[in-house]
Image (tube, rainbow, N blue to C red; front, side, top):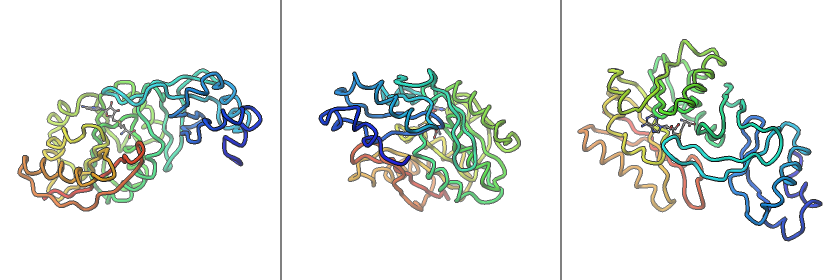
Amino acid sequence: MKHNLKFYLKNRLTANELKFAPSSFDVVGDILIFSEFSKELAKKEKIIGNTILENYPHIKTVLKKINKYAGKFRTPKLKVIAGENRKETICKENNVFIKLDAEKVYFSPRMSSERKRIAGLVKPNESVLVMFNGCAPYSLVIAKNTKCREVYGIEINPIANEYALENIKKNKLENKIRLFLGDVRKVMPRLNKKFDRILMPLPKGGENFLDLALRCIKKNGIVHFYDFLHEDEFHKAGEKVKSACLKSKRKFRILKTIKCGQYSPRFYRVCVDFVVD
Ligand code: SAM
């Protein structure tokens, strides 16, 4: 993109309308998604969408979020404002292809650097579990870029799990990734297996599943616990880990607490990496 969106909209909107023009968006494959779209521009959405299609040739569809991530599946409601009438796309990140429907499956391209960070920590021969697997972005990136032994992924949204299956085939990772459809509360006890590393990418309410992760983590294994917190309250993520470990009678040591994405002004996605003795 040579210029930002406002540059291209200069001749299409009035000076006042331009003030409300959205400045940030996500690109997932060939789809561009606006998270915040001002009500003042409701009548101009087609013009804005078409301006994007004319100036960013790799974008085929423009969507706007009309409802934020919600419900158990953490999916948004999206509206097509220009281009092809579809919400399915294939994106590429960290050496893998990920196919998904942006409305039926949770996915955030903003987490690609966090996925890369986690993959960078995985050691040869590790057994990794991704609770809340979605369409499998973490599983794919870890299986493709590390020498892990295996990755297990558990997901409750059947459509996300279908895409995960397709993504495993598309990336030829059938030998490394195993998928389980269902609630982690039901699936994990049935696996009867312990892991070297467990990822918990469910930042809203993930603390309610820490007991499960602690039951399935090996001695000296590492858990990555995600949380959404105000910037003044990052310590609360560590407190949640401490409280769960006390209840489960497991000794733990926090290795790192990092910011890995902004969720709204002054609220961040935080990851606590901790080792369990
Ligand atoms: N890991 C994926 C990613 O990063 O794109 C998805 C993350 S999304 C924030 C959380 C996912 O957890 C959703 O796909 C949702 O359907 C799933 N989920 C929520 N509760 C669950 C549960 N109890 N058991 C299994 N999956 C669950």
